[in-house]
Image (tube, rainbow, N blue to C red; front, side, top):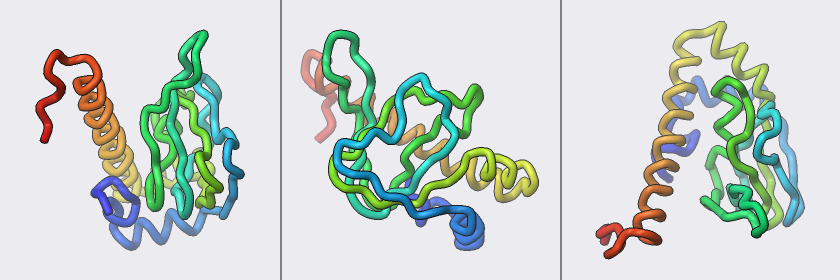
Length: 150
């Protein structure tokens, strides 16, 4: 379990509070959870299965940026204005997840500063982790001698 999963990143009381507003959802393999450029109005925590984050590439198939599995947050754009997806997401296998309404969670964050800070730090950690992972992949692809990471 990495420090970016909800279980590792949020104290138990905040996890429990957040889970109270979740609902269980399922996605078939190949289902699109969201599309780049559309309104980011919800987010998910994967229970089972795998979700690919992808980036639209004109004239080509979408480029997979990262694959996410159990316990991981799918969707960060819901937390940052203008609340528009920066990537797309597709179920690579059948997926079961906890779904959260972004408006409800943002309201909870506004009402309770401690809860809001915990959510903000968690989402920030996820974004930082994914940015670092993307940086390493780019170095491996385009640097003259790879990233040097062993």
